[in-house]
Image 1 (spheres, rainbow, N blue to C red):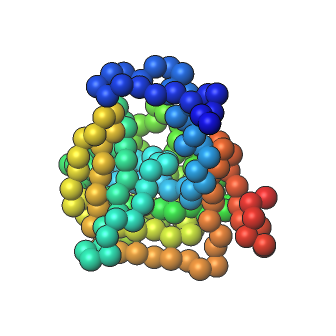
Image 2: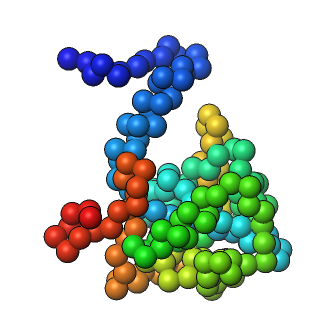
Image 3: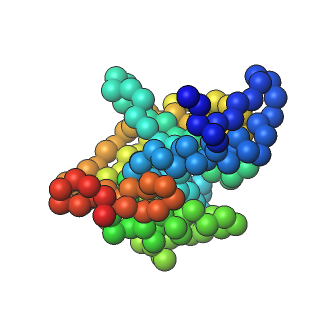
Length: 181
């Protein structure tokens, strides 16, 4: 039995607005950690909260992020050839919200949030649960996004911090029993 809000589209045609809405609703049912991608180009840094981040390969160590083509981040990474990914801790929903705001310009730092630098000089969110510093390995434009593949050159994990989660358009944290609260 098909759900009443199910929609389909023919290959090669634009998705109707109803399908786009149901698509977003369906993806909101996928709980994920919250990550921020950052890069530095000259004296300017820029960061962006991303919902599409995943590990890709252990040998070589690769990760990927998907970035909207309309955002400045794919071009900045392409030019700098390096970026960092901060995996936010349960206390960092303000950092996620800050980096999700549209219309921000590259700046000399992130004083509102706090930053630290990787060994390679890439900005990372201060006190994140973990961060990865990556060299640009590959990129591919698919639809309205660019898939950025990074080769991990540095990884830091802080085991004393719980992850920030995002589920059904709300921040969540793990409870002591493993459930979100």
